[in-house]
View 1 (tube, rainbow, N blue to C red):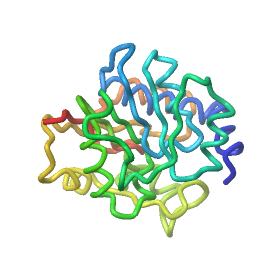
View 2 (cartoon, rainbow, N blue to C red; view 1 turned 180 degrees about the vertical axis):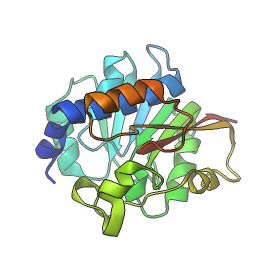
View 3 (cartoon, one colour; view 1 turned 135 degrees about the horizontal axis):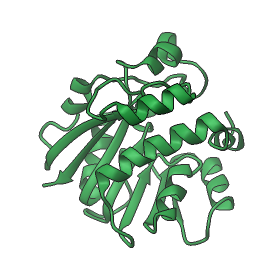
View 4 (cartoon, rainbow, N blue to C red; view 1 turned 135 degrees about the vertical axis):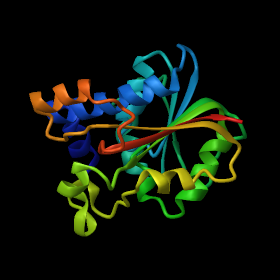
Length: 213
């Protein structure tokens, strides 16, 4: 998928709803204040980075793909910072950002444990990392047999598996929440999203939030 096509999906009715639903959960968990610094690991075209900047956060997007970063630069404010880099070896000092987020990106990274350790290392206060949920309707629709579309080649995890990735790291108050219980984006999906507690482990996106110890 090319970056323009990927970003255009977020402009569709379903894509915008999914993006806003996922971002709303992450934003609630991070509880960032205007002016806080934030790193988006695996930012791709920068949709979530730009969304965080719209909430008055000082946002930086990191991705290993220079073509996608070029697209992000072209379609964002000059105030945003874009960095080419590897999630397994982040080019930042310890505690460089108030908050770090990563949404459905580490499932495409070899050695997710190392990437998680790097996210924790560069976070000063709080982090929120989202994974694709194997215990979800989205997995039944898009994740089987190697995945389809933008999900091709992605790894899908359970709650237990994502919790294990934080074992031994300097973190506290780990919380797991999920979002996008019905990925159709219909009116029924929206109603269910409003009614279902985020603590239910069946949403398409699993988010682990924690504090730096």
